[in-house]
Amino acid sequence: MRRAAFAVAAGAMAVSLAACGSAKESGNGGKPSGSAKKGDAIKVGLLLPENQTARYEKFDRPLIEKKIKELTNGKGQVVYANAKQDASTQNQQVDAMITNKVDVLIVDAVDTAAIKGSVQKAKDQGIPVVAYDRLAEGPISAYTSFDNETVGKTQGEALLKALGSKAKSGKIVMMNGSITDPNAAQFKKGAHEVLDGKVNVGKEYDTKDWKPENANSNMEAAISALGKKNIIGVYSANDGMAGGIVTALKAAGISVPVTGQDAELAGVQRIVSGDQYMSVYKPYAPEADAAAEMAVALAQGKSLDSIAKDKVDSPTTKQIPTVILPVTALTKDNIKDTVVKDGVYTVADICTAQYKAACAKLGLK
Image (cartoon, rainbow, N blue to C red):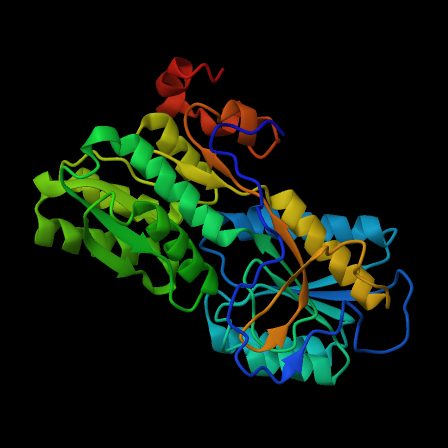
């Protein structure tokens, strides 16, 4: 895939994503802790965190299911559940997967700390767990995600570019993600590394559950507190929240650059129309493929050495075999070369009647 100017490499891959402290648990070197080797007829439990963000049902789930079928000659079975942003529900779903005797779990945790006990239960039953997108606590056997601090840096750099010489002429609002998601802390850290000292942060929020309606309420509060003439830009950690933010900005008659992440269709359309400045495009297929490959290998009793080239530490587990993937800043200038070229969306998907004129100006036909 051709990368635009904002494209970033995954960087130094041997990274530590969290302090280890006095961890008592340790990674197992990529080898499953469970039973004897299995063939292709494996059962994979897939637990995703919520269904409000478009990516999970539209991309992650079908891509993982497809790859597992490919890797198991059509014999592998995927048992799926979505927690709908409820950590207790997700813990119950792990229990159900254990009862269902899955051979391996792929888990994108609602709350990475709250899932720890359930991950331990799975390990105790010989079921390895692949942490997907968010680094869950507990004895995780493998992990795949993107370079999350780089995501934040990419967003911050894009916002600075959009602001240009006006970067200190007013105040920006920072709309971070949920405190239950360790990725949100990493996005925030990366963004602050780029923005601190170069902009004035007027208000900053950690947005409960990543919900657009919560971001909308926070943005309304920021506008009330700062005054609409003083806001020059908004750091939004993802596209869903950007949607709520843009609604509040429009209602107040404010037009300023807004960042995002996930390249959701609605986010791409807002970029086309000029309501949102950028998003972070994280190709779903490589992440889904990595999770599926590691899950199948673990279920079949194989080493992860040829798949997971890197290691990370969580607060509870050291040296987790890991696949870290690069990201790209998506702006109106590279829509055709990213999400359209990669087949994520067609021009027809993006350029509905409401956006046809704006698409034509960008050469999206």
